[in-house]
Image (tube, rainbow, N blue to C red; front, side, top):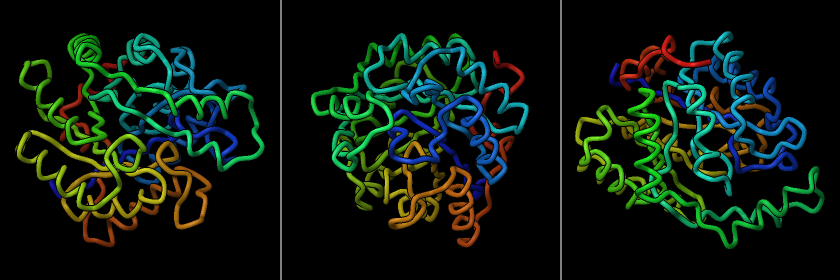
Length: 309
């Protein structure tokens, strides 16, 4: 099982806006359908955000997650991973609401505060579907995505110790790996740890292969054989970085949260198409893709029978 690659698919996220792609899932039904298709294509883990069904704006309401998550669970056996990053500008309490209400097997956890700049995207559009979109992007010019040590401790104790939820530790820079090590030193989380290395976000570590190599080296030094690692890269870097991660023995994340494209200048028509593409690359390199149950075993998850949706 060690050579099987865990594919995560982040189907909608809280970064891209509806104007950017007609294929971005917005309603609970669209998000659930995209998730099931991605699982059928080979994704073992589905990373989830919700959106206002009318406007497409990132939305923390638990009722939206409680509408889409049971539908996904009926349609596939993928591990459901609820974001605690939410949408940029949400409070810590808003970002936690969905995971606290659904008690999922996994939740994401951003492990450091950072400048999170998506304002350059605003210059690529001249007409918008919704009034909120340009202002949402532009506000990140003067925005800090807040994830203090107190915030991280709160989430770990609320979800990890309170619900038995395991974390996708999202590391946008080298220092974030050391923040995960600090959590481990406190005795608040137990192995195996799932470290998601994030590249190409303005304000975080750049999408340079040397950065991936260095972060992998440091993670090995910090966590030894107590962790699983995965890579996601924004935009055009998605597939090249995923491929490099596979060749280094890591796992991968794709999906329309991270990129709206499937190739150079070619917009993707679905999340499943991205999963199918990376699965083809994985298998062409001589690796196999992990099933959801194999991912559960490797990550020591509590199981789909102990959730609240």
